[in-house]
Length: 453
Image 1 (spheres, rainbow, N blue to C red):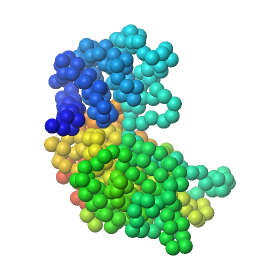
Image 2: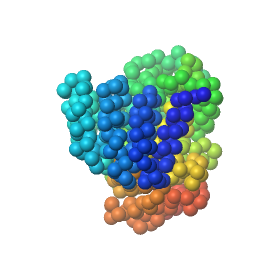
Image 3: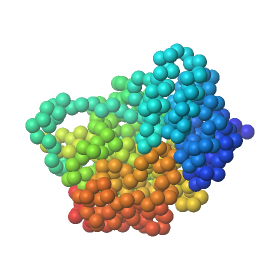
Image 4: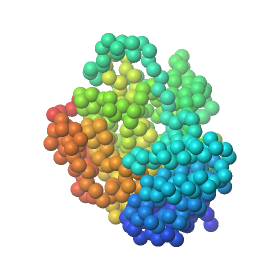
């Protein structure tokens, strides 16, 4: 019997129930949740913490008997599990601050300094945030599944920008590295670029005749069954069939030995998620047009992304003066596939989850319409400066299936009503009431925004 898989399914089932009917949980159910926080898989602990957050919001009294058992795990469990335990305690602390503080004070932790960091993490927890908890130096996030590359700063361009900010799109997309038929060992590591929960990343170089090219190599960290290798190869092959679009990151090579890996264009710019509140209106329109056009081309070839978020839009520098960096969409079909290795719910952060990713029984399976929903969210965030819903991860999942989003103009009065109409249709709960195709969405969006780029 697959005990780990069984525990993951039970935890996910509990989260589904907490989303749809949080008041159905009784004290005994919550006490049994404690065992999830002893599990070795972070995704099980993460799922359990989201469920606790929903339950405590709906019925605070049922969690009181679980505070001490949960807090005691900070003594008995390895330190790498503490972030998830503290997150759950942070949710409970919003309703029962005294209970949580007393439980922490009774603990015999490794030293007083560590206890202070735990208390500080709980005290600093904000229910309206993403559920992040940081108790050690350096960045910490729940959602770095595909890793992140630290952007390289172009000093010359930065100096020039002090005098004149870029104000137009480039006349041509930047050049891209050529694809090759290669093995993993044909790529020479130049620098270690980081590690996500699912992959390791390296900046690499490779040779084609007289030229040397720079690229980014990603390799799956976890052991994968043969069936995964087959799916992985299929997804990368599909990605390659559409990567001739100027706003799709091109694939250089991929393979499954020694572990599944792929090499893509190395981009020196930031992610869209890091630029949301810095993008001007004209540039935002251009970014939206290029990304939507990329999805249209991919869908016309039968390829869907399945996990579109601003983190997957990465900017490439251009070689023309006074021009915007080029947006490119990466990781086609990969986020949901990698999450199968650890059963992370949905494959996207809760704030970007479509209704069908939260409750497939009610809203159906993930398909091309899910990409349209995600495009709607991305455009919403670019134009409004924020997403339609706020709250801790569990609450965000609940709102995704129960609440209608306000129009983008509610947060930014400069957004035209015509754009409100298009974006809200893309964000309908039922896929039947969204746009039939990405091409239909593109046509109405361009009309609403006054044309293309």
